[in-house]
Image: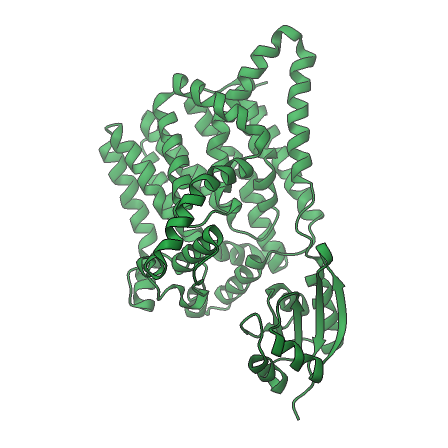
Amino acid sequence: MPRGRVVLLALACALGLRLWLVHRAEVISVDGVQYLEVAQLLRAGAWQRALRSFYPPGYPLAIAAVEPLAGGWERAGLAVSVAAGTLAVAPLAGIARLVGLDGVALAAALLGLALAPYPARYAADVRSEALYGLLLLAAVWAAAAALARSRRTAPMLGGLAIGLAYLVRPEGLLLVLPLGGGLAAARRGRAAAALALVAAVVAAPYVLYLRADTGRWIVSRKAANVLSLGIRAGSGEGVVVSQGDSDRTGLVAVVRANPRAFAKKLLVDSGRTFAAFADCLFVAYVPFLLVGFVRVRRRAPAVGRLLHAVTWFYVALFALTYVDRRFYAGLVGPAMVWCGDGFAWLWERLARRGRAAQLGAAAALAALAVGKALGASEAAAWVRELGGEIAREGGPRQAIAARDLRVAYYAGGRTVEVPFPIDGAHLAALLDGGAGWLVVLDGDLAPDGAATLARRAVRVRRVPLSKGRTADLYRLPAPP
């Protein structure tokens, strides 16, 4: 099949899978609620409030730009994610061309990305992963083109992609290290300098804003919070830095607060990071990845080294900070170069058994990937159910105390911040006019809080969750 048709087929498969996942989705993600809040602030011209968000502005800016065409904020977020997740096929095709993939290897690489389960799921939600993955692939393609000297403007395009990736996810700025380092190691010093300079120019306004707003040189408000979450997840110890305090807390301070927990986290996550990468890639792809390491090294050693530099740099970075499957979604695209070449190896081995065996293997792998993408996901319909109940009973703009921001989103109200588990003192403040509604899950109430709630409020709804857990909705009495 001609290269152009392969690209179009992969684009069609990517779009079709993501649209189907959007169609069957239950609820928006928790992060998505916050992204939409920032996008609405940007549209309203409240730039100061928007830029003080915990999240960087790139993805909300894209949502704000698309919303007039999409006809709704959540639709706009989904449109950006679906479009980005689909278009990621294009820079991957460019990388594959520079590596020399064609025929079955090219088709396997592009269709592998189109059908990869977790990138497809993340691209069917209001999340930043798909847009970031597109920009990461664009940056890698530009750096690979600079290595091949196939495009004079490639280093500048790579720097632009890195700067934009940083505005979507903070770790995007660190692409300068593996890509710039790869160019410099290949004696493409001017290209490395141009890439780094353009990336710095694009990133500078937001970095300077953070400096002016916080009084500190930081590149992200998220760093301390993410690192502390990683320490807690990896070691079971340590205090999590809140989102509000994150931009005032240094990374060194987080480590110094509990060096033993950080050391334990490094020990545990040095293995977990590879498992998370394999999980996000899709375990059925891993054998082809390993075979592809050898074949791509022989085929295009310089670009192969660049792909290794990007992939393992981030695998190590997440081991140092926070291991979460979502974080590895951007690495699936570059890894498809290896996976595609690895599948071509299998195709060649099956040739002696005939075309039916070859097509059967391809169909089985595609079915596994699509089945995984369409498989069970987080059961969170309860947030829409309880939010709808509040909207029906209490009207708009209700004050709601809930651990999950999506309850207030679906109620059309606002979330009241309260520390969980809620003790008696904080519950008394809610009961005295702090909120009109309270949603609690198992473990959300301290013993004295539970006793106070039993005396002064009545449960109006209980929704069963998985594993015998429940979500309870309370209407709080109006203050006297």
